[in-house]
Amino acid sequence: MSTPQSKPPVVVTGGAGAIGTVLVHALADAGHAVRVIDNLSSGKRERLRDLEQLGRLTFHSQDLGRDDDLRPTFRGAGEVWHLAANPNISLGTQNPRIDLENGTLAMAHVLEAARQTDVRRVLFASSSVVYGMPTVFPTPESYGPLLPESQYGASKLASEALISAYCHSYGMRGWIFRFANIVGPGMTHGVIPDFLQKIRRDPNRLEVLGDGRQAKSYLWVTDCVAGMRRAEEASQEVVNVFNLGTEQQVPVRDIAQRVVAAFGGRARIEYTGGRQGWPGDIPLQLLSVSKILSLGWRPQYDSSTAVDMAIAAGRAELGI
Amino acid sequence: MSTPQSKPPVVVTGGAGAIGTVLVHALADAGHAVRVIDNLSSGKRERLRDLEQLGRLTFHSQDLGRDDDLRPTFRGAGEVWHLAANPNISLGTQNPRIDLENGTLAMAHVLEAARQTDVRRVLFASSSVVYGMPTVFPTPESYGPLLPESQYGASKLASEALISAYCHSYGMRGWIFRFANIVGPGMTHGVIPDFLQKIRRDPNRLEVLGDGRQAKSYLWVTDCVAGMRRAEEASQEVVNVFNLGTEQQVPVRDIAQRVVAAFGGRARIEYTGGRQGWPGDIPLQLLSVSKILSLGWRPQYDSSTAVDMAIAAGRAELGI
Image 1 (tube, helix red, strand yellow):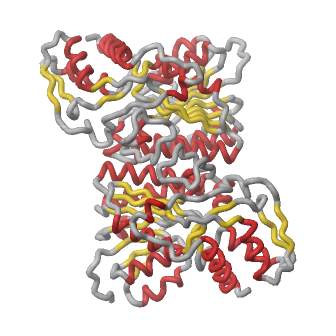
Image 2 (tube, helix red, strand yellow; image 1 turned 60 degrees about the vertical axis):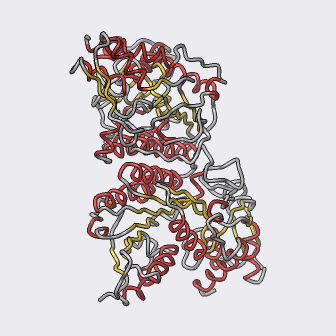
Image 3 (cartoon, chains in turn green, orange; image 1 turned 60 degrees about the horizontal axis):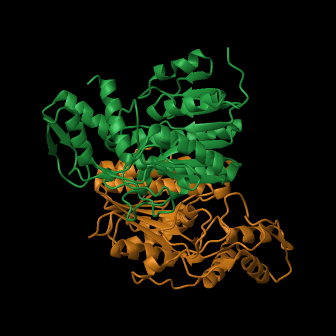
């Protein structure tokens, strides 16, 4: 059924998501058998059909936030990439239980399954939101204190803390990646899908949450995956923390203008006002990436190009 | 039943513990009605009998790690002091569920109860262990990355993250206190109770976990409580993070020698060796306390005096 594999199988949670799909294909191309765990709350299994049909991927419909027994899926694997998360930050503010379960408790369950099955390498998709509203830009990995402003951010920091404790207590090794805004095909959340969905509903106006001056860095998904894999290869501390992003910011106002221009320029841009787009929004984000750059990784696309590519990809998906 | 109160009631979790008892009495003396939540896993209710008999304290036997409904205890309170925790760090390493439930989930339940009952001030006993093994001494509140080495440390950092998210999302205000080693009467865990119990069992030898060169700062419990109350009064950010400790370290070797001397000097000190006393032990701890000192707080006792007082208090309690 499966092609011969020289490398140990890997577990990928959230492997049917927008970032997970790209990672899973990269890992399969590198010769790993891949076991994807996904509850399909936002992921799509058809993205993985090619690998499933080739017998190089098994799909496991499990819910990490509940007490599903993950051990059968973990047994014999060499490492676990934990990418599953609630992608909707605002939803977590409305109901804190969502990020507690799908963030913090999911991480605890993943780590406990890894410990019990002797899977000793854990790689985790964290986020720049662990920094809260930093006062230093670009923000280095050593920045503190870490005061996240959303339940999503709290669950990411709690997950980092759990990884660190597990690695130091049980002979495991961890890689923590604090993501800038990752963009690419198949994204369901974030400013670009939001703008595209709005302008499809009403081509004459585009509502922008906040004053439009929020400015963040954007990283194309393949660059993100390449960065994570480079860090795993080159950095072998007990716990390895890396920012992953580009060195440029794009203001939300610019993204709105580009989306409007792509639709003929007739939509009126309306700002709801305020520095934050929503409670928990971090209006300024620019990560120091000198640590990952020192390992030889270079993003292929800068923030501006990544935004343009994401607008194009989103339009194609929506058929607009 | 109760004396007239001009100040709003306060909730104190872990209020029957060694630090909680001192805090509760200070709050009652200041005119607050106090509601103590404690599962008595290590706390002792008789410490609170005086205030209960005066009608100034109500005791609530609730388990924060489970889904007990805390709202009736919270309703109408002005603030919650969250001190409850698993005091046994090694136990958490053996069973990670303990700190997940009694640390992270307990904090989530406390915050959710506070949010639902409109209690807008949260004060939390965190720990220097959130810093993991820091490379900067004395370690400032801005130190990062935060890589705790124990499940206990992970639960403290996860709790800090939750406080920050709740405060920023729901109009609450938080005070986070990262404790050095707090010593005083009634302590059940830590190096001094450990040594006293060992020498009582065998007056001829004292086993020291590690090489004895671990060096930490010690703060007497009344100084700790005074520091927290000063910070609450003087610091009014959305989230206020303070280290609380003294500016001197005492090596474990010195503590062992003092304990042996107190028992006539005949016990042989035996070191198990190794830099860490146990998995998750942080051998060097010295917090920068310039932030809390800038508010006018001064500890009454230095580390060395606090250690001597704790040895004396422990002897009296054990009747040795």
